[in-house]
Image (cartoon, rainbow, N blue to C red; front, side, top):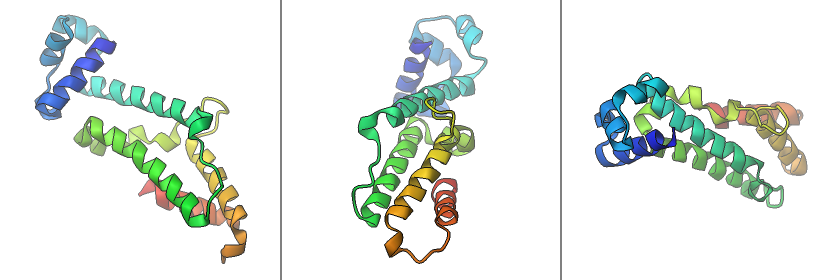
Length: 160
């Protein structure tokens, strides 16, 4: 229910997430608490729905050709571009409710979600992107196994 999500986000902005209750959400959304409970059993379920909606928006962003990362710069520029993009996603999720995200961040790990276009996870896509990036800059690297280096970079970047 969009009205419940909107009311929740307004209340988080005004009161902070800890002060938000399902009764306050129902009141702000203009529905009875009983109606709210038909859709959401508790406040955490509403937060989860909001996060999942945000992750769906991130999926759409990643599928947009205009947002794709190109291998056009130096190694440093390309790595910086992917780091900025990754940090942007997590900042957006943290801005919704940092405490909730900090507690449940593994459930909302964007990189584990499937790319709806090809059934691979964004993490796998990221690994393929890093392999291509490292192959492009192979002449600057001191590694024998590009795939292993890319997977190690991915693990370091996305799992810490």
